[in-house]
Length: 434
Image (tube, rainbow, N blue to C red; front, side):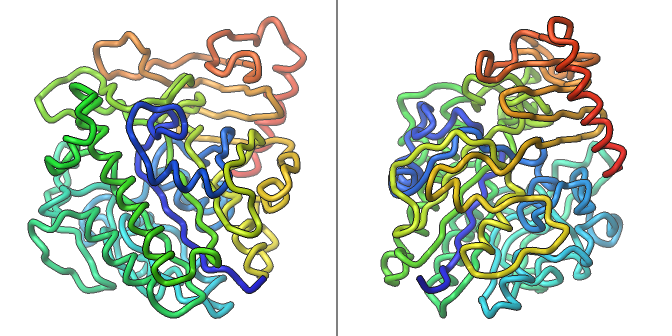
């Protein structure tokens, strides 16, 4: 087959239990359509429980710690908060595909650097339209959520390196429009479409609220934004079909981490943890290394190579996207890539290429080996909490996910040998990357 086009779509804060094709109660006909045409991954993980680390892994094929993005990127205005973006010595998927003759463009949320020195154009993309920071108002494109941390509000909407004013333009619609224009151009192309939905603020026009009228309260407000996201995915798929390139395009969909419990999701002044989004059967949420914070929806479609309607339960992660895409495109991955190609898993159901996978975030760490998972000093907001404070589950928490996907029972004392093996292995990895 000829080299495929590549469409990588990333949702923001979407939980495992939100899309309809993952058992959620929010209608997502276009994500369901994509899953029917491709493979739905049920053991698919983000490499971080927050935005920037996962996005760095997606684009570099490395653990966030080795990509230089172990935590969120800078959020303040470039004039006051310039440091901390993705290092430009890290080859990205855009760099590698651009060198192989692909047109490259990204549309939406970047969150890997605030200056011209670490924006998308500095990382191999030919085109960029979107926001550099992690979160803006959907209509004014103002970053106003960090005033409590000493950051003054600022405007954040860009075409390339030109700041543009489009007050009142609904950001997800703009992302979709620009991305559809791009995929309607010359092939082969790599389009990285990073929606800001369903991340707070929960700004959705009324027509989307009507689509989730069977829901109520915070679930309905959140569900309306998931509907916005789903509509955007549908428009992108329609654009591929309209241009006659759907059969020649590898499509990857994922979320950057699990659902948010942040109070900032509320629009009514509530100070309780937000529970409008769902991690499905899993414990934890955004910021947590329990499964709910890192197990996310993952769908891959490529007609002619991947059987439609398949479901695979092999362990895989977002750092596998780069080597997988490069495998399909006939490009060699960097020698220091941590991810593995999933081509055999996607096409033939081969076992996971990973013996073990690791995570580290602030004071937490975790390792997965087969069905076994060890979390050290995991953090969470308990399900019955009425305040948004995190609780640390001190020490080692060991679970067999085949028997206990919700990580409800700690087997650390019952299986001391397993615990010791995983803890030693995890510590060795931490020593290497930190």
